[in-house]
Image (tube, rainbow, N blue to C red):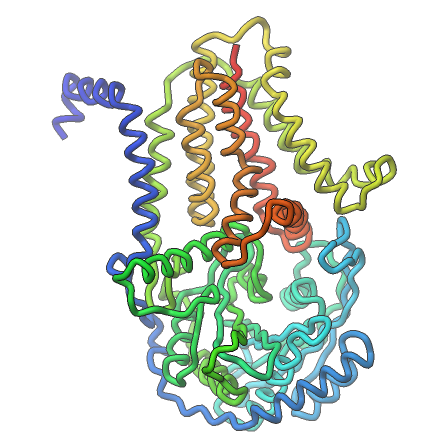
Length: 590
């Protein structure tokens, strides 16, 4: 404390920080990166454990016997789906009623802000079918959900068959203390969003849907099932939800515990667990697994139907069957028993899952990195912004206003001007939206010129220092808040924006610095992330294919915002991009 209370010692510390400012910032940046990369090393992580006492033991006897019959039901579902050219609503209603469920349907429609090129649809109409198994031993105030999306073609037919098989088996058991809802949703995420809004009497996306005629209790947990093959070699669990939300870690622990008990190969991010953690290849495997989770979480999009449940504080995950042509095979009966065991444990819950972590990273299913371990890596990057700040008192209102007006244009103009663009240029609606966004983003590079035209006279030395102070503090607060909500997105933005923010001044070489600043801009960060993500998945693409994928990612990000309320697009357009423009303005300060 003497160092801080003694004015002479305090001034000596300030002088030391001022003299060694650049080396300290350099060390902090690489220390933050090294800290983060070290998180994948097994001795630096924590072993997963079950925090919820009600789910602490897997000593239940799973007896589900009807795996082959479930696959036969899936083939029957596929035949009816092919016959009607979509969701076989009538067949599903009759089949669920035959299994003793209370069956209801919900119709919905959604007009997209621009066509989804992946599925070539503009207006989406569909029907959800769900059946409720009422709890025989409780007042029916709580519920669990098992869902399977009805997807086009031959995808996910086996999942619907297994869902119906489990519904028939669960109906004959007497130990259920919660309602169990079996849901088959059409059009994947859009259908799931309509059902969740109807169930909770909310409408946050402007979708048209019919009110639900039947409801269960308050939903405690949910699983979404994806199976597209009779032969499954492993089960993959998907956790990343809307805006980077994650379910309580105990849900993943429960999945891993039953996979270990029953002897099913389980993966996360499509990667098996390895025991050679002390080798270079084992560490590289853990890094790839963790980075895939970081990239998916940073995207802000739901990576399965479960991702929309998290908005309503419902712990949910997607269980995906993988056929990777390994010699190891898992039959449908085994998968059914695994799901039976998980639901019997969730049935024992006396309260919502809350005792384990909500903020974590997973280098494997047996080890996790908690928020207390990974936030110091972000803190080392964020402290650079404070070290590079300079005090001042002049107004920086004009650059702030212009940069945020540019960000507002980036957010609003692409969708609003798509009809004008289509009318005057030979492009589709989706191409018009993406190209308009790129045009507005590029036009923002003229910000320094526009700012100087509005400023009276040339900027002063104190002027750019004050602007940088405001920009650095702005960026520090922005990244800090983002990292609390979505650590992966905040860390990726910090990796690219912090060096640019710390380096830029009006006195550095203009051409080289402009290239450096553009390369670290949000748009280029997204471009690099697309190629890096493909490399992590071991599916590298050429530059041309990567560019097309990049444009598709931009369009999908906007659609996710307008359809499901993803916050990544408005965050980048209204906050991150204007903040970057402030540093661009500093570089060209006169």
